[in-house]
Amino acid sequence: MIEAVMLWNEPNNLSHWDFKLDPEWRKFSEMALLAAQAIRKVNPNLKIALGGISPIDPHFIELLAGNGLLDALDIVALHGFPLDWNHWSIHDWPRKIDEIRAITNKPIWVSEAGVSSFGAEEVQLFGLQKTAELLLPIVERVHWYSLFDLPAQWTATTRHREAEGSAYYRHYYMGLIREDGNPKLAHRYFPAGLGICQWFHYQDPRLECGVQWLKKLGVQYLRTGLSWADSYRPGAQEWFDRQMSATESFTTTLTLCFTPEHLGEQPHHTSPPRNLWDFAGFATWAVERYTAPPNRDQTRCLQQAQQLVGNY
Image 1: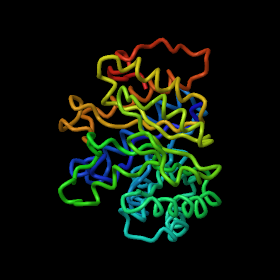
Image 2: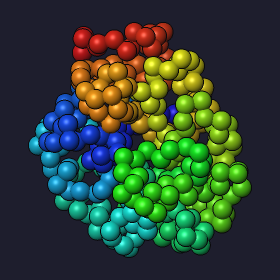
Image 3: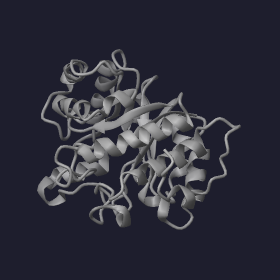
Image 4: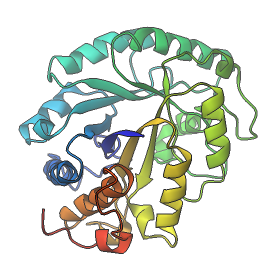
């Protein structure tokens, strides 16, 4: 069951949105606003979340509010990794939540919170338990990042690999399950009520195994995503259908993001699209196909959704 759609991922992080092309996030705000309005027409009861921000920045939320975006959304989502990348203590989680609550009365979710096992699995275990202790009592949803380690031959979604040094390689150790399929120490202590964020890549061979592990861990709340960029690959609709069918037993937050290269101002997944309506078209298709009531027409093909949505 899809309980929420999330518009983009970490929009204040250069790895996910090129704010050099959009320094005041006006294009992002308009793009997300158009998508939210289109989603409301398809499924007015579906929750709409702002893509989890990283870093946690109250000024960025003020900026989006000034751009008129927050009024169209139901949830503000945050990401935090204090034991790996952020310059604050894990014990500061309640303070970071309060900083955002001082700006908006929207419900706050933590859609990614994680700790790598880069240094030691015992560090990850401490981080898992402390994160659950601090966050589960004060926010409605917490998604642990992540279920699986990133395979060593894959590239982490980042634009500053050279500048990150050893911090870059922490991306590869965020999972509860190693690349070889064996569980880490922390998996035995996964707390009730904690969700998981797991991105499944295009034609990801880990999908079925991932669903089995989520069930073994007793996970109810899942966050995953559909890549707008992947929607132009051969067989994309079949892959999306397979992914959504496999995960339908979970209460899912579905993230929509990543610009197709040929639609961007620059040929990169972080670029603002040249036509801001195009993202609304993809969002409309995804929500109509995977969340709309059964009596709605869900036969619109992906190719139609990729055209300009001019009637919203």
